[in-house]
Amino acid sequence: MLVVSAHPEATSVTRQLADISVSTLVKQGHQVMESDLYAMNWKAIYDASDFPDRVSNERLSFIQESAHAYSNGYQTADVTEEQRKLAEADAVILHFPLWWFSMPAIMKGWIDRVWAYGLAYGYKDAGNRYRYGEGGLAGKRALLAVSVGGPAVDYGPRGINGPLDQLLFPITHGTLFFAGMDVLPEFALYSTGAYDSEAMAAGAGAWRERLAGLFTDAPVPFRRQNDGDYPDRHVLSENILTNQRGLTVHTIPGSREH
Amino acid sequence: MLVVSAHPEATSVTRQLADISVSTLVKQGHQVMESDLYAMNWKAIYDASDFPDRVSNERLSFIQESAHAYSNGYQTADVTEEQRKLAEADAVILHFPLWWFSMPAIMKGWIDRVWAYGLAYGYKDAGNRYRYGEGGLAGKRALLAVSVGGPAVDYGPRGINGPLDQLLFPITHGTLFFAGMDVLPEFALYSTGAYDSEAMAAGAGAWRERLAGLFTDAPVPFRRQNDGDYPDRHVLSENILTNQRGLTVHTIPGSREH
Image: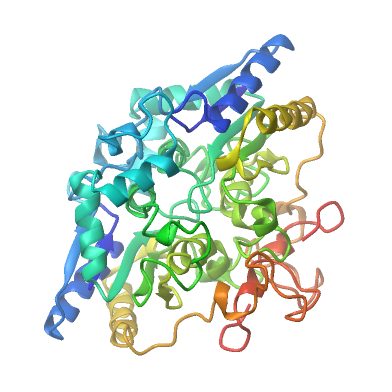
């Protein structure tokens, strides 16, 4: 188990939920690893210093240097350590506040730097042959636990912000499922800007319930690239959800409302 | 004019397009400001050091401290300077490579820190009264110029990654339009991982053409919160696109395919 969190305030909703994750899973006998990104002073910016040994010292290509660093053991120690945790984990929970409908920069920088070529993309150095359901993180579960300042109604099917699952699609589908993970439906607490201790207790209870299903709940049925739905590995077969388009066609209908 | 870019390599597609933006607009007589985030060593992580004078030294609430810092002049100098550039700009172009279907962390951190309470949200200290078409950045144009490593087909209406405009919705709608900006359809170059000088020349030409329409092209017709489509300011009127749901209902149909 790996619990990643991105909030500097120990009493924040985000960090309280992360603490619950750790204590609950430890109590259940799981080996729990933590990455409290603010406490670790995680380096968010992906740059030349991520590549102490370069393929080219003249021109910085992130893909080329990531491949070189990952496959030859030239990554920085902080990145290697996070990848070690990922390798040992059978599930990963990402706790973060929703800032501008996405992750805080510190957590995006965790993805940018740790999701290396050869691990999370370019698996087996085979381009996009393995992605979306297969890849270096296959077999692991992933779950987002998001603290949302605004009210739930704004994130409903016709809410003004857009539905939360579609706003998070670049993360759930494009980042976690892309690398092979089984992604559970996201957990969210809303209106957390106005949380009092009663609301927090209710939210904590709801989170404990979701945590109990971490290893048994059904993942979001995103379509796997190599199971036949994408005959050319790029475009959804015209026989599936014919005439439909957009993010939602990449989820098998039935278990989730869109 | 403000040109913001997020790539450390001067010869990258991202930076080449940003250079074209600057030189073209200068030639046209515009006053052009630049924020080359890597060159500026921009601080990506939004944390306690953003608030030298605190409402509460015990508990860090970003919203509360952002409001206090913005309205009382307690922000850090780097944030104040970016807000000054924004205030002077009539248009903002964001140049970035698409990393995990979103911005690099350094640019997300520019948004996280610069998009302050009182400016980009909580405008006039009136909660969500002014947002989506109104707010502190109203009257300014915004345009994303994105370098995409993968092929265009993956981002088509039924492409496996999802359509680019929907993947970018948290930025175009949720960040730029939220704060009041008129957002132009995003510009993208694809398969940039394999760019040679010929492809770069073609991409540069396409970008020059789009730049020429910066002040004349029609913005994406996102629905404004306070123009009647959201009677309660939260949910789209049931008389509009009845029975439809998802991100796309927030754009007035007609000018854009979804």
